[in-house]
Image (cartoon, rainbow, N blue to C red; front, side, top):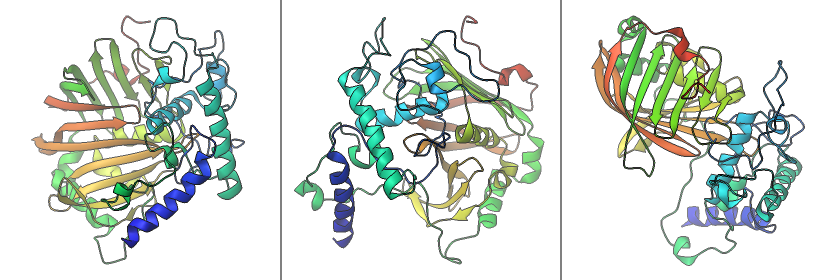
Length: 412
């Protein structure tokens, strides 16, 4: 009961502060913007592209060679979210969408139709701009510019934040939202970072067998959240950190690539179909690629710490979290009994808070002596894909071009 009342008091205070203005505001716990003049954190979105920027692509504008293309260079009528890369801008749109349970057409004139007017200024977009400025001011004046308050802080999936606690919720089961950044467990209460990762390597088959796996090609299917039909999927991976994931959707190919240095996302039916990844989002994509060849995964991120024991689907898991050089936070969940990796949640910074990406792994089977998941789910701020592999061919030659900048179907 005390815990429940503490939650209500803290949440109620923040909600009262923000809901005074009306449409969007919220909370995420740290992170800094890629634009130092933006008083809040920033990152690059992994895949939030379906939630369009609310502006139209500007014609004839090219980014400076020394830096990624900025939002105001790619879109028209950008007034507030300036000075951040396109992928970070799209991630911010995804956070807006998730926090309010809305999609592009709820704010952008004609979105989803044949003649969208992204640059138009309907009332909701104007309110959203004011909310961004309000949230920035709150974080600047109270939290030294850290993203402590975000849209999600108050909205939690509702277009209008509630200012009154429902009695059923007061006396019901508490809704506990895990923090992005986890505390370290007391020394001796859980295994060390080295012990957990060593058990993971052994559970996969041992360091020698992992070292012998230098590439693989996987085939199977992918099913989008809310769909009943599946699409053909392919994965190409090459040690130590190159990967290409391709889903042949009816509307066009969905492709993610990382060539060891650069990462790209290609999405069908979006205002920005193809864009590069930057900053902590690029760091996250590199981590995804390294997980295909995990022998050196512990060395890929500094500052690991072991947090408290948790559960996934009724099974105990050890929780290990690390922070990357560009602000990415990655949390690994290892099955306590088997040692295998069950889940990875990584966070990239963005203009309005951290952008989460979640992998869930299951159905491990041996491939060339290495345990590999034949089922996994890739969840991001704007969608979720469930993959089921039917075959994995180990140690096969792969053309280096597979990991290059994706080319849309038809070559355009």
